[in-house]
Amino acid sequence: MKKIVILHSDIYADATEDELDCLEQAEAISEALHLLDYEPILLPFVLDLNQTIKKLKALKPYAVFNIVESINGKGSLIHLATALLDYLQIPYTGCHTDAMFLTSNKPLAKKIMQHANIVTPAWVTQEGFCSQSTPANVYLIKSSWEHASIGLDENSLIRYTNQENLMEEMNRRKEKLGGSCYAEAYIDGREFNIALISGMSGVMVLPAAEMLFRDYAPNKPKLVDYKAKWVADSFEYNNTIRKFDFHENDADLISALREIALRCWDLFGLRGYARVDFRVDNQGIPFVLEINANPCLSPDAGFTAALEQAKIKYHEAIGFIIKNSLK
Ligand SMILES: Nc1ncnc2c1ncn2[C@@H]1O[C@H](COP(=O)(O)OP(=O)(O)OP(=O)(O)O)[C@@H](O)[C@H]1O
Ligand SMILES: [Mg+2]
Image 1: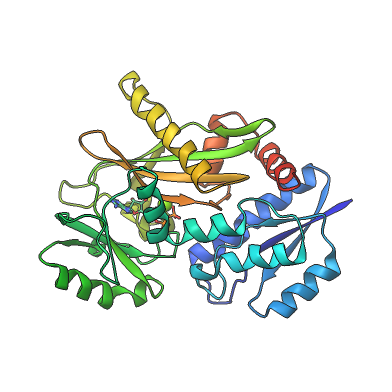
Image 2: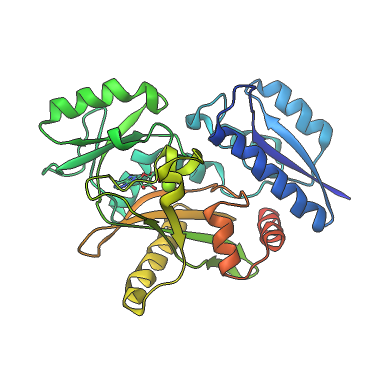
């Protein structure tokens, strides 16, 4: 039986919900691999590279299913996993190292998008780079490297007064946001996700999902923040609802989102599977928030929900992703 190593983030005893999710993904992928007649083996990626190299060399996998999201708790090290697999010449699933690095560094990804005329919200970096001369009214201070809405809550929004104040706020909040952050214009509008997967004949765009903010008071910011993703008994978790059915009036918007997601796929050279997150402002303009080069594959994740909508079985999708890694 061919061995597939599921390489995942190293999980410590005091792991938080978002970190533990990596093991849920590993379990689901493992089950799918059994169905596909592979032998799955779970392996944590540890920062002691010699240890990881030794284990990988001993296991001699047919391929690695890479779901490493952070190393030593840092999203900024994510590309070390694929870089090491490149070095060992072991085929692996999903995006290559360059795409992993470019998309995980959000301000850098935004710069590349802006140059390619893909609309993304205006932003200001900790170093003082401003993407446009007129400031936005409200900014969201978010992590430059972390995923899973780490450090995001309703206090992440700040009204713009002056550049100095914005810089101070970023400085004050950066530790909570994984060490590095930036300010992004808050797009007060609808939120969508477009998932993509490499199928038998090229990339397929899966059905669009919208996140609804049910019963949010008018003054409550509409954010899929940390609580909405991970705190099961919170108002936010229970009232952010994913939907896949759309009124015909939305048809043009959905096809625009699908087209932009494909442009992101090409621009960043994505491979295997990915998810592009959008906000659409009140004038109907779509803004790309971020590109997830290794989106969550848990049973309850948006990617899995989109597969279900497309009537693609989970293990079938895992099979596509593996086949693609061997091309
Ligand atoms: N510029 C913005 N305007 C409005 N809302 C935003 C903006 N940026 C982020 N958000 C909100 O915060 C959430 C998380 O942001 P984003 O997707 O950029 O980060 P993430 O932590 O990498 O998420 P993921 O879990 O998808 O990897 C979004 O789903 C959205 O609800
Ligand atoms: Mg996101």
